[in-house]
Image 1 (tube, chains in turn brown, blue):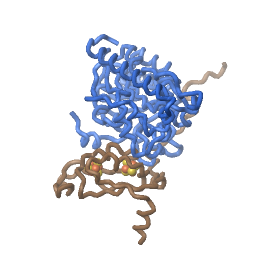
Image 2: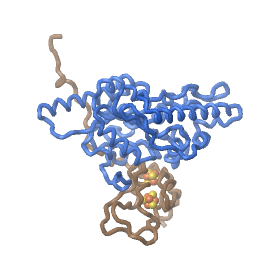
Image 3: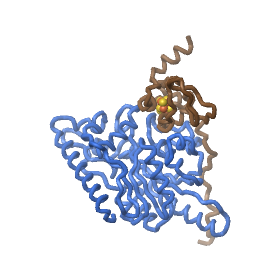
Image 4: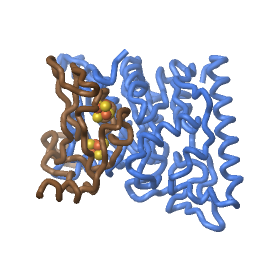
Length: 115
Length: 310
Ligand code: SF4
Ligand code: SF4
């Protein structure tokens, strides 16, 4: 072993910048679509914590948003589902305590929007 | 005590666009654990579902420093990162503290990576090892692992007229890890976000190695409707199939005791991997399973009551 090599000489592994998966839109996997009824939401954050695809965005609302019972909900509140990534698993609809998410067939949603 | 609102507002390490199956509970486990870290994290990830589905070159869902490793060496690399970090700190090259986390599936933890895990726990490196436990080699299509439960149908031990599926009970990985005399080991699930968050907090605060086994229902190979992932996670706890407990400095504390434990059938039914157990000739398998679960629960209660060191 004449030419001893150190770790500096090893081939570098592949480096990737963070979150490049954002370019890959998994929404095309969906066959069922969650329809969100904001007027019945209590902003409990259960659907947000349980969504495997981080497809339910949240924001901090100081002034509050109107939800169930016409009440104002402040702090962390959920927004409309991000259909670029939602895979339509239905966990959010299954677990929502107020049943304000309904699953419909994706074709129905597409038909309704192109009418 | 953190609220769900606070937890979901913390750092989210995974971006959307990953390719875990629809209804998979791995991202939920990963997000909850990392949300519990007040420090920056460095992730060592064994080959497995999380690794292959989060990073398909040139795509990656990770927003935090992350390393793709082989099946067997996640714990060894985490130990190396910790040692290097300590050396850098000593020389003044790094200032802030970090939390080092290794993630492995049950194949990479109970079986292939076990030697490296045991070594790292024994040497006392300060890091958290998390197994997301879907009870089999799921990313390669449901082969039996040391975590696969008794009676489950897998492609390597298929159920049929001459077979009930797996005939051994799973390894008790939490007690095995606790037996290394580490300060903190715990069993958790995907659905109980607050419990998992609190356990991760305790693990990060531990002065030494820590270990969390999180049950991760797998829609593809447990074979159930994608919407029911959290429902099965709950049933696993309500039937005492997967008790929520922790072992702090060798002492057992049960975090949740079902008021009335549900019969194991409620967890089994609707899962394709257990469908064969509902045939009349396999009735005895369910009975045996129920007996084992009840005995294990009694044993756990005794460990808690006596505070005998594991
Ligand atoms: S689970 Fe239901 S009520 Fe809770 S935040 Fe989500 S949509 Fe609103
Ligand atoms: S259907 Fe599934 S992926 Fe879509 S928003 Fe609900 S939980 Fe998330």
